[in-house]
Structures are given as C-alpha cells and as structure tokens.
Length: 108
Image 1: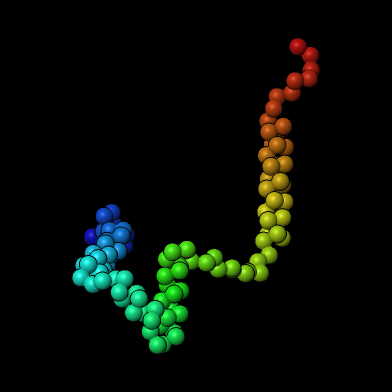
Image 2 (image 1 turned 120 degrees about the vertical axis):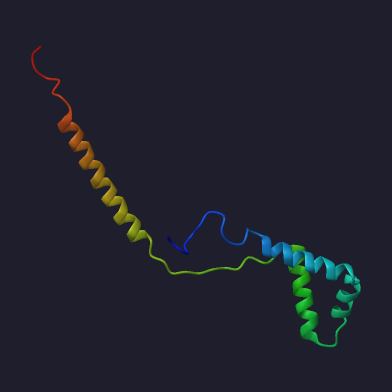
C-alpha cells in the first residue's frame, strides 16, 4: 500500500483560502466606516503612511504599473541549432520515403 504522492481529490480546493480570507475581511469591513479610515490615513502626519495609502489606492483604481523585466538570453543560436537539426531529420525522412517508393519507370 502506497502513502503520499498525488491523489485524486486530495488537498485544499483551489481558492478555498481566498474565500476564508475574503469572508473575514468582509466581516471586519462591514463593522467599520471604510471611507473615514482612508481619510484618516491620508491625513496622517507620517508622510510614509500617506504615500503608502496613495500608492495602494491608485494601484487599486488604475491597476498596478507594468514592471519591465530585462534578461540577457541568447535563444537565437539555440533556435538556429534546433532548426538545422529539424531540417536534417526532414531530409532523412524524405530520402527514406523516396527509397520506399516503387519505381515508376520501366516497361509495363
């Protein structure tokens, strides 16, 4: 009898944790005046709190800004190598097919 490993239907269902977290958040937010809290955060004497609050709110309104990702990847030579190999295999298959074809020339 085996133990462990991947089993059908095992584990937490997708999104289950998000539902628990969401319901808790909804319960807490229902008990407070959200707008008043946001206003208080925006009027804070601590500039860092005001900045973080503004960033959070604008990210929620406008969506997060796209972050550029740079990577130095040399795929060109690998692609060229794979293409050469594929062409060789195709040529070999075609040559084999030609050898298997019965000769159409000759007298009948």
